[in-house]
Length: 190
Length: 218
Image (cartoon, rainbow over all chains, first blue to last red; front, side):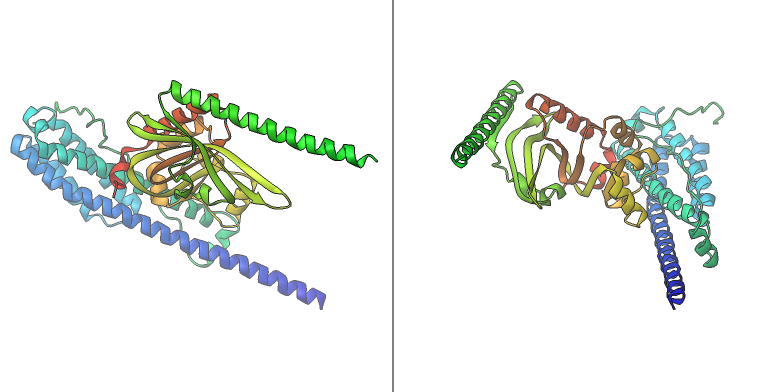
């Protein structure tokens, strides 16, 4: 009788632990999805700013066609990518670098640099870049906590049983910074 | 026979303690007045600002909350106040907790955030599922417990801020709520109060610009 009670207790304890682990995995996965939605909101904000930036620069430097077309193309490619975070990251990285290059081009045009509209856009882009980085850090922190649970014992037993799989990180370096755009070699630009 | 002398000695001891504590209190107040004058700041022995009613989590702990010895003024354009604060907890005996605090008012309206040090109990809590906000630096997570909204924590605690906090760990507790930043230390000697003010100013300098644009004053 005592042995039976002990066995029942052990089974209930294991079931309880499994229940707690399962719920935590679900919670972490939902946090990852929510934090990805927040990244998506900030990325969308950047997509919305880019045409405005392109048109503003075009008004002062229409002959910088290669850079302007490049940024427009990179924006389209980034918007078209709806894959997981590790597929999206290279596209966003490329777009960020394209925007930085466009801002570097503006350095050569004093009238453009002095334009209030351009300065406001630049400020908004820097702000958006900072928000993307915060959202990215939150997303990656959630992914790290989740992936650690999925891959370590004993939670990996529950993870495999209920098909929880690792999530990818979103690695994008900030391209546009408060101090101003990075210097870019434009010697090859027509 | 001995009861009478013992009683008299006991009363004398109590009186001596009261007088001694009163003298210490006066000496502390005098030192703070002198320091405030040197720094061209104002001083009030009493809290005329309603500091205890401010929405910091520390001020909701225990009973008998009291702020006193308030020094205030402007530092680098930001209003700042330093003060003594205490509360007590009733258990087998009354246990007093005494601190020296400083807070600054800044142009922002932030959700509540609290930064304290990890200890055995908070680590046990972590293992039992009571997680605080975990940032990306393991060193930082091991040393500090961050309570508050995840998004705001990540916005306030960027890489530079975390690195600075790890190197300038001279606080018991930091709280941010609304426009205020509060730093708390165990009760300090008056001569070290300016260091607390300087620490608070350095914290202010490390606040990311994004905090002000994301959480502007309402």
